[in-house]
Amino acid sequence: MSLEIANLDVSIEGIGILRDVNLTIPTGEMAGLIGLNGAGKTTLIRAVMGLLPSDRGSIAFKGEDLTRQPAYRRADMRISYMPEDRRLIPELTVTENMLMPAWANKIRDGEQRLKWVYELMPEIADFGERKALQLSGGQQKLVALGRALIPGREMILLDEPFEGVAPVLAKRLSSVIGDLRGEGLTVLIAESDDAHSADLVDSTWQIERGEVSQGRRDRSESSDD
Ligand code: ATP
Image 1 (cartoon, rainbow, N blue to C red):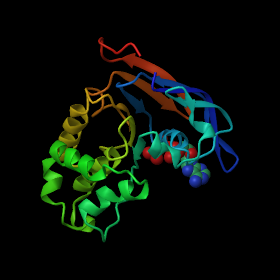
Image 2 (tube, protein in one colour; image 1 turned 45 degrees about the horizontal axis):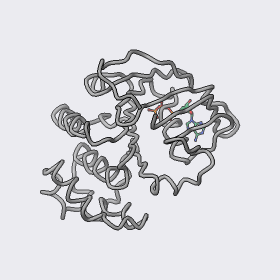
Image 3 (tube, rainbow, N blue to C red; image 1 turned 60 degrees about the vertical axis):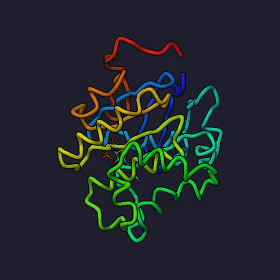
Image 4 (spheres, rainbow, N blue to C red; image 1 turned 90 degrees about the horizontal axis):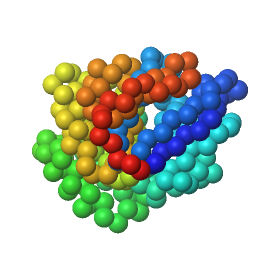
């Protein structure tokens, strides 16, 4: 298993948000986390990223308990996320935005990784020198995905990647995420419904008022680990 969350409770400002969450994703698989707004998707992703402390339970990545690691260790462990609101720096160019995690985390082969991301999404290479503020919301989502992929070689957590994206770009995003299959990446895709993720994922988890239950397994073939 790549990700193994067990009996996880998380609260925000004293209010219990996640309750006894159990969720696992085998290495190299894609999982959907489906729930309405306010269900707790962002809270779960932020807890995995170490941006929120947990009250109880464990979040193991390849056997190591992430709840005992400071947030910055996620980059060393090749774990990254794409926030729902993108958080690009508007005044910086697309290329600068993409390289930011590599600079911040002293990733030595950042440029090489950027080249790979540009091969995966040639359209963002085309606007690499433009400032982020000049891009549409959907284009910015592509850039935010690319930026997450620079440190995120083992696992990426995508927080509503298709939200507010025009249909053509949502289709493109979905095809890029599909192309990641076979890269050995473990992927979690949070969505309010499974409109875009259903065709991508191996398993689906439902989240409702902070409680997670396992939905169907979408693909018959799966890795053993
Ligand atoms: P959304 O798509 O709306 O972000 P979500 O499923 O990601 O939905 P969360 O953002 O994780 O949901 O929110 C889960 C619950 O935690 C909600 O009830 C929300 O009101 C609450 N919550 C989130 N952030 C805070 C905060 N800073 N202070 C208090 N409550 C919060």
